[in-house]
Image (tube, rainbow, N blue to C red; front, top):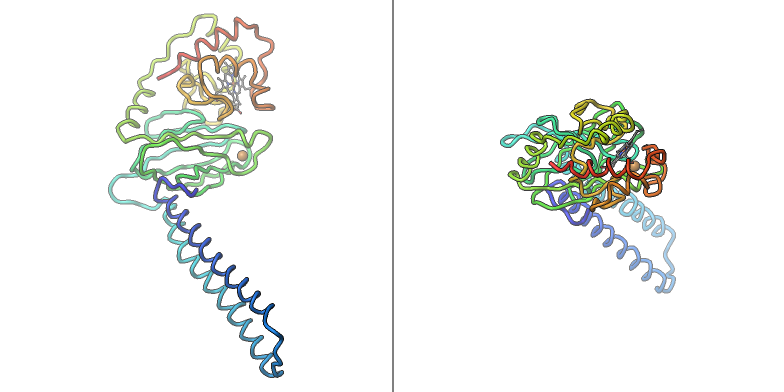
Length: 308
Ligand code: HEM
Ligand SMILES: [Cu+2]
């Protein structure tokens, strides 16, 4: 949050520092007055003056100071909140990205290009981004601290936040509304790229022809996995909403599996298939204990090749 990579985040960081500075001044002032008061010998103050002094404290400390603080805070905060609203802009139009929260993973859609992925969000630098968030089950909250504020993801409702990233970098996003057992392991890596690299990334997915699985892998996949909306590698239902499990169309190219629990190194997909309930207890994917080692090998070998 204090390491901003975009205008919205910079505004939030500024407000934070301003609030910190102002409250530090108030704290130091109050402590100083208290120390002075404690060390000063009691003075014989006449009755009528006591009442006047007390009134003065109430007016200045109890009314003026809070009012000034609130006005200052709002005069910073309102324009900054406005910056995150999806208002019309001139010039480069915002990129629309839909992010749908699931227990406990992120569905990410680029409606303009039809690209769908999960647990990773590639974004172009220097272009406004309208992130349309919603949820398939409980309330989650979308938050990439280095890019801006957070926004609730509510089932049956779409909220929109306008963000922008000003330079390429990788950022960690985190679900920030407690959503059950694996809330902590609901991480969304966001890769900000140059406009050209982002276009290449989108194009690679649009033009990608997934390598055909071996017949054995295809049979297993159709039988064991496709029911959860995972069939996009077979040219299936990408484009539908309400998937139960993440789209696997580009799973081989993701930096992590299980929304951040496992680095996607060679062999990681195989590990996920046999150990996912240990790596991420109670996640919504059923254990695959009824499948043998060779069956899991065949599936993992194929999924690893899904790298647009
Ligand atoms: C053998 C069949 C299956 C295979 C090969 C498979 C593969 C995978 C892989 C590789 C992931 C990690 C994806 C990522 O994090 O990017 C995953 C996650 C997931 N799968 Fe499966 N899956 C299978 C069956 C199922 C079934 C039948 C369901 C639904 C009942 C399901 C639901 C899920 C869910 C909910 C996640 C996300 C878990 C989380 O991170 O919380 N999967 N699956
Ligand atoms: Cu959560």
